Length: 108
Image (cartoon, rainbow, N blue to C red; front, side, top):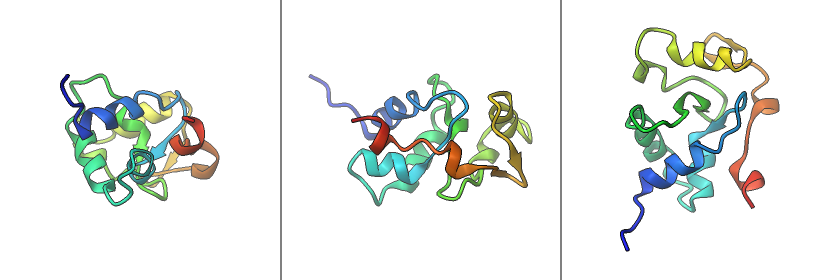
């Protein structure tokens, strides 16, 4: 049986983020038992655009759209979030704590 790569595990978790919610790179890393691998989760998101992964729902630990330059166009990440009802101001998710989806709590 083929072992699932870390990136594929990241994509599995990211696909579970509900519409209109966001999570962080670190929260996904922690859920996968690799708490110090937030940057690697970011690399996975950067490589996810052809894999049907809602990468726009993954932001940094305070809600900043740090991955936005990996999306086509200048504001695509923000537009995708706003299409789901997520307000963004100055590249940061408004009401981040309210909209935050924690896989440790939600995926038991």
